[in-house]
Length: 178
Image 1 (cartoon, rainbow, N blue to C red):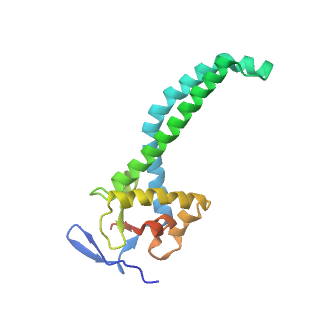
Image 2: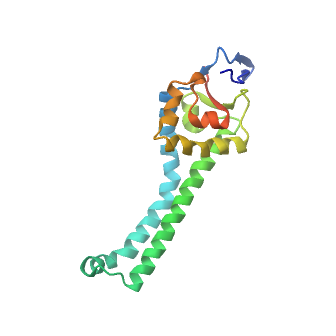
Image 3: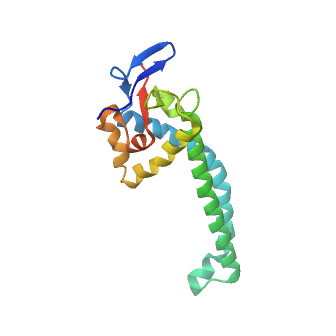
């Protein structure tokens, strides 16, 4: 399969795709671990107080539920509030994940902080910088890689140009900068 990988420009040096080095599974996994740690910081800063609030809001009802197996109106309203908070935290976490990857991979650095640490950058199939829309598409295409029980991510270990499933869907490459 002949893919549209032209030349990759790095600073003033032009690198042919035939001689380019691509980021495989293990280096990308290591970069993702760094990114996950970075992403967890703002999520934790927001989540911990809300989780603590819900715990203290529901704590008075723990004995009531254990003994009666029924839910009072007050406990139901506390549960409803905490479910709303949980939904908010899920949406917040998704937004942080999306914006972190989409903004950084479409930035002039073309990489998240984890990818930068390991000398990787994300390009389109022609070696050009991603638009925010394409970086967003790549980020949400990762859902497919998750849905395949991570096989979509593992594909970066054995496919031509080391492309994961979400790279194929979004038409992107992960280049290793020498």
